[in-house]
Figure (tube, one colour):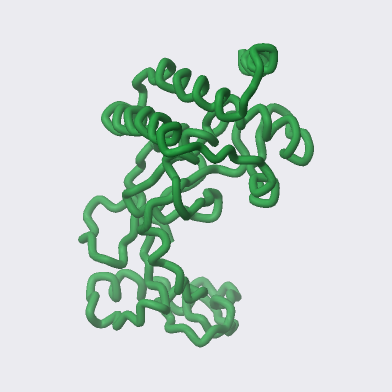
Length: 239
């Protein structure tokens, strides 16, 4: 359940969520949405959260996890959530991997008009229309994935079919894209510029970072060892 939290007390089970339409290139548009994260793996006692307990009870019996048929106050036949061993107030899945969300990660949308990879250190929980990449060298990867070279490479050889005016960053396709392995100095140059962009976008999402992104593109061209003619083809494709 996702709500616009304006008066709810923020506690550890209200987690900041992010979805496809607010993820952007190096930043996000923040609607201040939170999800009530009553994950079974947390083993919560709902009585310790009286406000939340009262709030969720208004949705009974609909949110019970029994798979039972019932009639609502209007006499309309309905069914509760599918049967699970979980408590009535908990999510259907255990979400035992919830700690992964608070780690640094890259968040992206699958179907977009242009690359929109965002490096997150704020502990966002992507919902079903947004995806994440975890692991190492994430700022470097964020810069690379947003670059013209990798975008052209992905669209031309790895995307798996044409979507009219769109790019589909499907996991199986992304995993096939060759990623250049930089030396420490090369990576640090790109990370430094990525940090400048991330900081600028955090303060002002509408600020113009074209020059900084151009600098990243230039460094990425070198990593892929592209010729002037190849670079021209990519630049023309992005014109």
